[in-house]
Length: 240
Image (cartoon, rainbow, N blue to C red; front, side):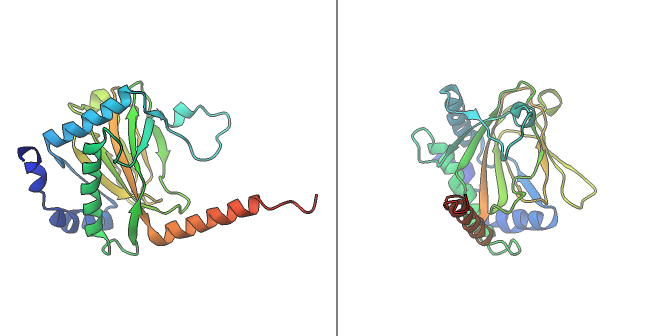
């Protein structure tokens, strides 16, 4: 199939072991361009655009309570969570399967992290009205998220005109990293406090798909804490 020729030629093992693993361990992030190729990447973009046009994307939520602060001043994206098996998500599912294969090849080589599962995929759109996402950490409280992976879908993107740059502030480093959200670019970075980051204001419609891979031990501990907290909050108050 000519459509898949570019993908079939990808050496996923070489990409994982010679590029992703060393870059994560040394710098904390890695990105590559032309991951799926124009034809397959366009199929993914078409499905995301269809989701957006169908009204399936809704305002992204904020963790915790932020009284008196406008949500859009912090986070201005619209999102939907998909597993990839939904009707109309076939190309997205293919993308996720390739990323999964890459991460599986990295397992056992990322320090202490033991990755066995991931989140659903978050399809996100910044509408292009100057909204972004203020500096934050994906996993500041040990919820299990270990590696953040983002696939960008924006053709003819000009960061000087359109903004929307993902700026990473690697912990303990003297530099920042600016990643433009260009079409068919795939980005990996640590999800925890090693990589505070922000999405700078976007002035054109900006699409991306994000998945988070979980460290098994930290994820299990986070689930246990949640269960314990939920159970304790449901216990009857006998002192009243």
